[in-house]
Image 1 (tube, rainbow, N blue to C red):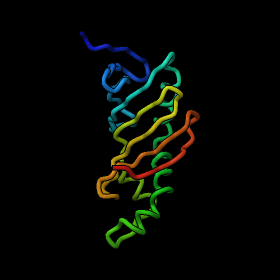
Image 2 (image 1 turned 90 degrees about the vertical axis):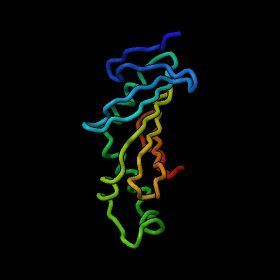
Image 3 (image 1 turned 120 degrees about the horizontal axis):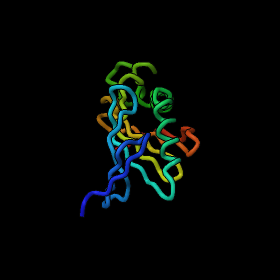
Length: 138
């Protein structure tokens, strides 16, 4: 059976992943930063497109949110004797994957820049684009 694909003006060519039950693609989220994108699409793809463009526009603010949530934890428990500031934290982490849910909410997965021993930083945003949580996983 051939791969199922759909073309989207904003999300590009999405390929159906039957094992994971979502559409996926690699896209440039900001200049020079290609990320893995996965999308749950129900009856409409509009929430996914809105979420993606909002994430593109707000990506620096999403990293700032992660820094505001996790910098103190890094400086108290993870640093090697040298504390860092918010700007350094923001510059070290890099978005690697985005999963957009049917309702437009999303989880963003960041490379931690070795701040937390290689653990992933996950930022959850709601369907309106508001940051809900930033946590360390893995």
